[in-house]
Length: 156
Image 1 (tube, rainbow, N blue to C red):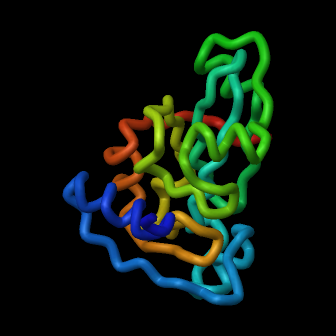
Image 2 (cartoon, rainbow, N blue to C red; image 1 turned 30 degrees about the vertical axis):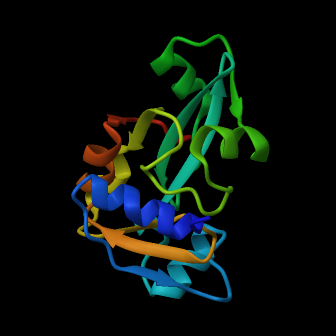
């Protein structure tokens, strides 16, 4: 069975993306750990967060410095309630564990919303299938690869 990083690499290749994936044995589970590992600003880290909107999984790609406002997501998808997905729900929806969820290449098609703040950087970093793997990309790449929508989804 292919590793999560290999599965992600194959999906990226299928989308026409050639990525340099870096692996960090000490792990990059949090945005702060990821930023430290690649020596970048925390705002350059793409957090791929799964939420359940009236029972349907949606993905929020947000800047590492921001928190997602569930009520903003609810308005975007016309849902009565939005909550963070459990680890099991996130894995079921994406095929990847929390902390390693990439911004695209998921097990099932997801509606994706991209934090506008990510577009303010030349380069952003995202998980590549595990909490120990990252890759760099332009901030427009996850938007295009995921079919996402730019949105104001941050708290505050």
